[in-house]
Length: 184
Image 1 (tube, rainbow, N blue to C red):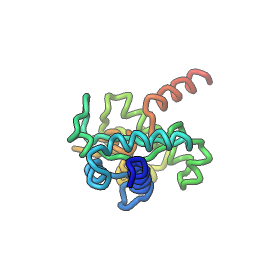
Image 2: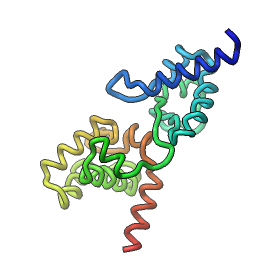
Image 3: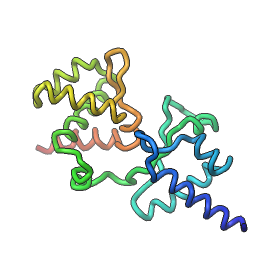
Image 4: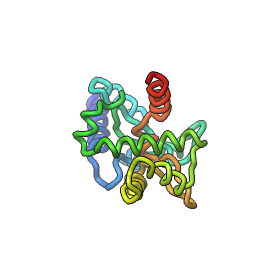
């Protein structure tokens, strides 16, 4: 097989691995990609990302711990997943099964956690959300956000989860909330 055909085959394989959800958690670990695609898997992912740009998608790398300058072993432990390149339209999100109140609650959770330095007591967040939603609904939503990976829970404190880091531009969300609040 020629080098070009081999590269095309590996790009196709990378797309299949990233787009087909095999576990409850979307995405593929770096070590799985390296095992399937070879040691130059990061180069293949970069080419795939360029191809996905044509469809408004991108390959997002989510490091499970804070990493300032990632090394090869950090990429092996990271989660690779395909997400929207640009913010999704509200109609697309609603079509995916989310309701407006769920989206609002998630946006509120993320913005509150972000504004308080990345962590907030669960009880404080429940109290804030309970001003707008019934407490039983708040508890169900927080449980769902944690289960889906949008929020992390540790020692009765909530923080932004791996999935929020992958799928949500937290800075853009904060900017839009601030600009919306100041415009009316």
